[in-house]
Image (tube, rainbow, N blue to C red; front, side):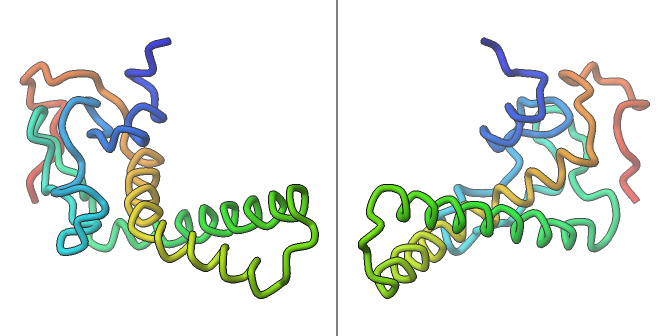
Length: 135
């Protein structure tokens, strides 16, 4: 099954929301010095990733929903698989997953937010009408 051209492909592979070919982030999410840093524009299609100042503040809502969903899923899994586990261990396990997964959740929230508002336009054909203005 070919997912290229779908938003899921862009999100799971951290690819440009416009062309699905160029990278979205400067570095891997677990490179903590550069975690969450975006490229200004796609290296393949040259379309800009930030459509207005403060655009990615909305990704906080996506991040919150994502982390709550993961935490609740882990808690339900614990209740089903090991209902005798102490509450301290449950909180510790969920907390450890949240701390260790934070860079990944942060990156996923940004790429998800971008895919909610930036439409797939296919590989770059080099025309100016597909590119967003620089300023």
